[in-house]
Image (cartoon, rainbow, N blue to C red; front, side, top):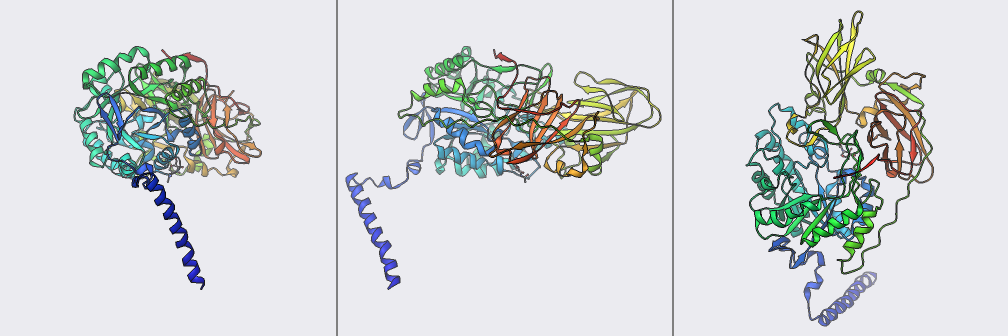
Length: 636
Ligand SMILES: *[C@@H]1O[C@H](CO)[C@@H](O)[C@H](O)[C@H]1NC(C)=O
């Protein structure tokens, strides 16, 4: 009885439902395809170049893209930033994929947490954005070594971005892994990925003519079936072009627009035009200004690009932050490393807030949209918390005893070749080299990027790009010579990426004889580094601390945690960690004065703040609700 009624009822509902669907179909003249969800209909052609237009399946398509790098935005905020992108009238998300973060050790892959690329791509799809993937393997992107893993540099003959066997073997293994994840997310398989870039700005590097065809094949052999394209800036346009791949350009100034109309035409005939990177702002380097670009100029250029019949991607739509030690550097005449903030003066700020560019571009892109744009999400509130007063302290010299046995080596070893992390070397952070000396004199050697030299615990100067010799003052008996070397970020753009080994490079000489018998500490300052420093290992703050040192304090948060900015006034140079998260470097030479602290990394109650200060501590760490990125200067 019961069984019967249980079985009858659903089938009666089912019958009714079928009747409704059938009558609906009869009314719609039996178009059975309406039963297939719209996102699975007509998925044969994908994005194509047809004459001067892009076509997505059967319709003309304009790419209105914007770049957000998932690795520069806390995962909890991805949705907020993507909704803001959609509400600005853009239809496509573009992102780079950083190999160095995804494969921190050879063959050990990480695609979880903030590196969950698939979740990011699927979220974009859910929000109504197509995706253009820029998998490198080299991505530039103002990230350490342009996104290439530092363990590649263990090989003394490494030739990055070429068909050198040691490089292609590593790329092959990485692509095997990466592509198996992204292949199912391609458009023709029902996903949002409509195009994939072949390497990145190779024309301006161009050391091996066989390399780009190799990367193209590496993508295709692993099942990449969507439109392939290259993108190059004006330094490499001519040389970046690859047979059978759509060439696109990167630019900022309206003066370069003729590249779109004449140059692209001359290299590939009539093809759809695309500016893959229209630079909405620019990145900043330590010691320089905060670069900005006027919002009216941005609007004018964007509109001129579209008027020229070109699709566009805004690089960056939202820059985010170089959390940790991931920032890159430039080294043309002088080594200059990039600051922690990747605000970029982009369309959204570093903390995801709206700018004048946002409202202007929203009006502009909105005018192309058939339907009204979705409303922009509400602002995430910001907060000034009570200042953090560090109450505990641990000098670096005292901390060393908790770091385990140092590596012992006859000669100095550079960072990438240190026997740590299962033979993968050290990627980021600091290294301390120690040896014993018995005489004063002239110390010489190469320390990248900056080595602070100590006689026992007294700082006597720096070895860096400019200074390769310093005087060691008169000493008595046996003395410990220490050099604390910081990797400030490997070069991400230029011809010298093969020479980016860090730490002491080659021998260190005292009065021209090489020093021997080193003790080497790998100070990567990863999470497990601080786990060794439990609370009873810290001292109360002394009157005159010995530097470098760690400072420990608490940031008190009531109710729900909100975004804030830490103002490092009075502090000289170092790194800040909140609840084990590395917020990045600060340096009083500026331009950046505040570090972005995402509210999602805070908890209600007391939050642990650790500051590693190299030179001089400030009295407190202030918290403010507004970022200070330094003195503005318009980019030319
Ligand atoms: C993977 O990366 C995420 C994001 O950086 C990190 O939180 C996590 O600890 C990493 N996982 C492993 C096993 O290292």
